[in-house]
Image (cartoon, rainbow, N blue to C red; front, side, top):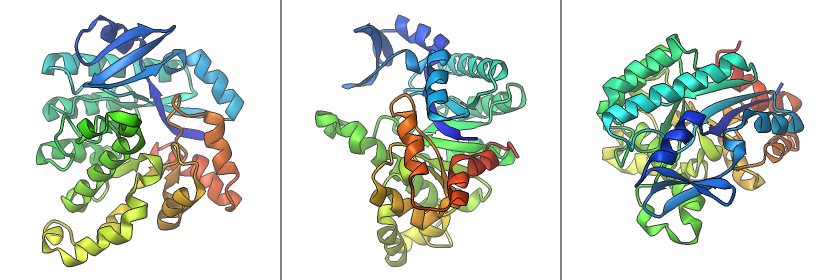
Length: 324
């Protein structure tokens, strides 16, 4: 069995809604596919692979992926006003639940209006208790607000209580205005933003407070594994870094799972693998932006034991999703 814990989807309801919108966010038809606009100068194309499950299943069959965890692609719902954000989140989660109930090859992470924590908590509870969704997908910042903001604490408390994994997904980076050229938003902006998000969760004391929180950081841990010595050094020399945590940042980071999305350069992947071991790595493809076949083959070709490959491709995900 192979589980892909990080796959993108634009539900048909979400697609229909954003085709009617003007301004940002919105979706437009383009060259036989679609283009989604999610910020000033920020857009990405997508095709039927993003919303047609039959196409997706064929690629899963070809790559050997048995189970895929779906999550709504960016921009999510936090760019909308309160009533619309709540409505779209509910509609999306209902559709994701319907997909998982009809097709045993899919599970899903809920989308919630993080900008409105009171609504987010209610939607987390509804999505899990009534709809059977298996986790939560949140952006790396919420319209510019960092994830260690105390207003988000009730969301983390709820996720911890329900033993839900939280996938922290890149969104519009906080410094996107200097990344518009050369595709730098996706090349480095997304990774910088998820790195910043997790470091703030660590230094801000969120992982100290919620010790049972289960976080998944995409892209082999962003750039944290590469910088971990520098991060711990800052903790050792800067008294401000010790105000809310009692251990070096690396100790908290070792509690976090990382996925393998777009991590095909072995030396870079090795940073995460050596720091966290196979116990904290899960297969994630970021499909349809990345080839499922390539994602699976990269893990199969690693010079590690079959037992470790099994952890990465299935066992760790089973634990996170409570399939065992």
